[in-house]
Length: 120
View 1: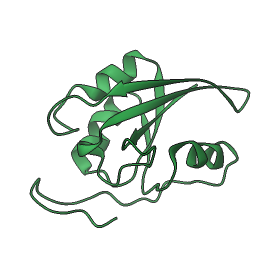
View 2: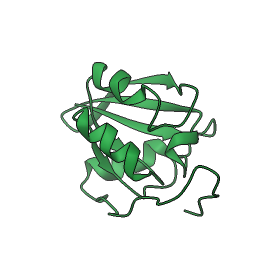
View 3: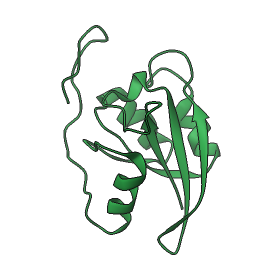
View 4: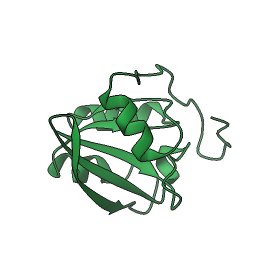
């Protein structure tokens, strides 16, 4: 299984999916992290970039995201990537919590234009 997390350079989950600095892609076997890969964020808004297809090609099936809009959720979902919303904190720590069953989808998408400031 591969899980992606949109991050800032501080390894914190970025509160705004479409503006993250990059993605950490974790390879999981038997609920353990066996590999990590850093994938740079493409230019442009997350929902209008090709990041969903790039992550799909890498085998990603789950995205642990902070704030994320409807368009991005739809694009990721159409690429076979389940989105778990409203995650925050250190990417590795949140991933471990997710693997232990302690993180569930927050169920709320950002609803905004691209000039707003998210406050997640």
